Amino acid sequence: MSYLQAFLISLVVTVLCGRVLIPALRRLKAGQSIKRDGPVWHMSKEGTPTMGGLMFIAGMLLAVIVTAIPQFRAGNWSAGAMLALSLIYGAIGFFDDYMKVKHHHNEGLKAGQKFILQLAVAVAFVLLLRYLGFLSPNLYVPFAGVTIPLPEAVYVIFAAFVIVGTVNSVNLTDGVDGLVTGVTLPVAVCFFALAAVWKMESQAIFAAALTAGLIGFLIYNFHPAKVFMGDTGSLFLGGAVSALAFALDMPLVLVPLGLVYICETLSDILQVGYFKLTHGKRIFKMAPIHHHFEKCGWSEIKVFAVFSGVSLVLAVVTFFCVRSRYGL
Image (cartoon, rainbow, N blue to C red; front, side, top):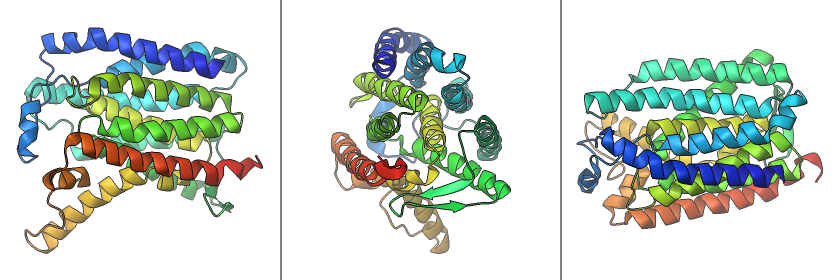
């Protein structure tokens, strides 16, 4: 029942927030600035309200706080820790978006500033989960079904870079109407299903709220998008996905489950590296890879459908391959 309550609260609050927030963002002229080196057909999106991630952040915040009260009273603060990580990353994204809107360009915080902030937050989160007893320094390997013990310091360093990498990969996937929302929905549902099967109530509540928030946001974010989530939303989502993986004590599940995010990031890294090595040649028509397919003639709806469909298949495969971890 708590899962359903979290889902409904998050969904209703997100949808209602959208009705209020989008007109407010328009009045504040909080419009997205489009990169001049991006796809030329995206220039028509210039001025579309950004920071729309605030609507599903509000929905999740209320849903988790209200629904997880029994867990908090019982001393189980895992939902609070996951929410805190997501909110802090969302706050970093909000400041980044604010700087872009204020100065009317597509550059906010410097890359180095964001990396240091994100790394510090990730280390604090991992240490908090260790302190609360929800995380072990033993690395579970999906599909192989084995666990590899790691020295504490090594695990913390590894975990921090996984979180930062995931957050930025999710952020990079946000480049086409509804794309990161559609790709993340199956990920959230998979986490919910695993948490429910393993009777991890706090994690299931958080994942249910995340799922509902994404559904509510997609109403406004599907092509043609009425609002963009901005870094506010995409960094929050990256934090939420990372938080669930670690709260379930299986960060390596992000490899199969988040393969779309990984491919987006690798395409960008390969493109930049090859461009520098060959003094101007490119592997893809444009990176990240969703823009490559756009340049090949795919519509935004087709990119959304294919990438979300691949994410759904990966989520189903991942669920059935790791659900027996605890003998279930």
